Image (cartoon, rainbow, N blue to C red; front, side, top):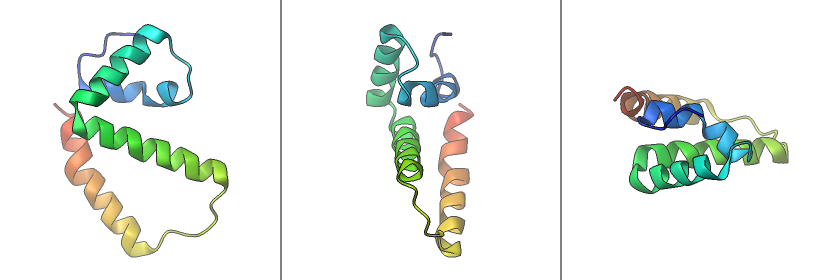
Length: 84
């Protein structure tokens, strides 16, 4: 695994971390980053929630207004942080 120097580097490995497919050293680096970076911690929690919901087989459709607000939030907050 490459070094985790930026939020963008970190986000590339979120799924692997969530699925337990990385080594202990990398896990420590990711946990440390999560503790120090609120935007990445939010992205991780969102990913984990999404995976949990998918595993549970949620079949209810998301209301359109919720989809619109979620997209706006992700564009306004998360994308800007990843560009740093």
